[in-house]
Length: 76
Image (cartoon, rainbow, N blue to C red; front, side):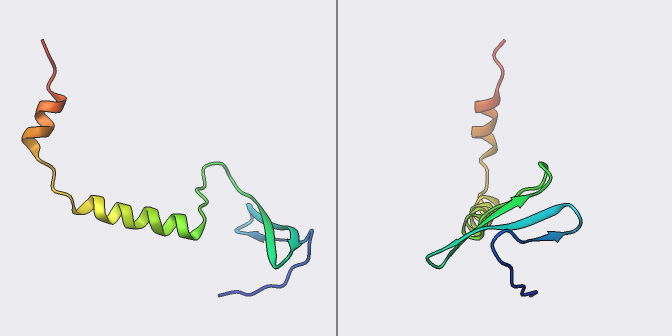
């Protein structure tokens, strides 16, 4: 893990196209701004973990093919 010290208004650049800037420091909280390409997904860690857990659970489900066929059956 890389550990850096930054002051309000300072930033770091990641991979030449992502800027992480310190916007404010108040009452033990740090506000950061992230400037990254629009096609890049950025998540808070707790949300990312939740998404991963839900994907793992969804992958464990066994679909009922007959029920799915009935749902997607086209009427003539």
